[in-house]
Image 1 (spheres, rainbow, N blue to C red):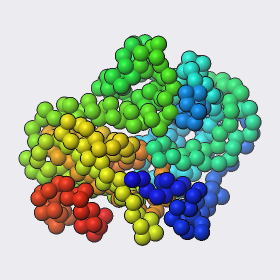
Image 2 (cartoon, rainbow, N blue to C red):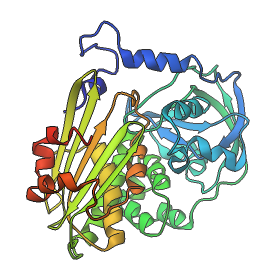
Image 3 (tube, rainbow, N blue to C red):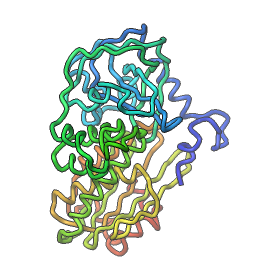
Image 4 (cartoon, helix red, strand yellow):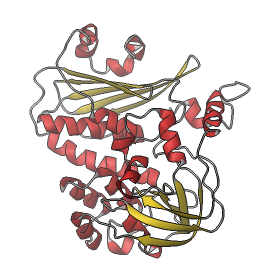
Length: 378
């Protein structure tokens, strides 16, 4: 079940309150956002691209850039590894300064060089000419980063050359299925977020079947494909010798990860806390990789933990609890889940975790079955 706030988004007042406290906090932040003025915008795309969902297969394709910010300085506005560690308001302010021009199409090849801008290894200076003044608002999504002001593109002048990873250039010329191409690119060291954008922009897959994929879908699709590939390797590894524990927190998201000796399987619990209420999402994955439900947050967390297990050369039964507090009043995207858990350290028992040993070692499912017993920790 999704959080009541995630379902409502401040429109249906499902909580019964007369006004949405989340929307009020967003509006307070919006009052201090940057205002993009004029229709001609020059800057560098970090790179940044978003493929919309409404009206698919004919969708809006957005290219973003911070005005008057050029060169490597533009990376700070979009790269999850540089955004991580900043507070929520700073992330919103950075993203509010990103202007997005869009074109609407169902055919990737009609976009010209715009997809190459989005998969460049370095920022590219771009002059966008907008057809009208940009809409001064912020758009928030559970999976993707917030989007700032946007308007239709009237023209684009590229002042520089995109540098596309060689492995990606080969994949673009190949006929591999998109999921297989994503896995191969990851194995060759291509940045995961570049792969996600390439997937969304129809640069991968059988050439006669390539199409635009909404960014929300492409993020999870790449997480699943890459995660499944890593899981296939991890299943062949020896089990962890003892239970390992990890804890991390960021933006009022708290994560507890436990890896116990046993086959590779996953138990995931996500708890949204607001106004004294809690809503939960549960995902259980069996040793064959079959999920009880598909959830983008789970897939991002799973990928990060699988990367850690692969680096340790060990497998185990994994339990993940994510507790989302009231200070995380808007989502900045699944990247914060992935990047936070990538920084989490798995280690044997110490005093911080001793009181949870019996709970976890007796039955890893108890992390899912009795979440109230973790309230003190979370």
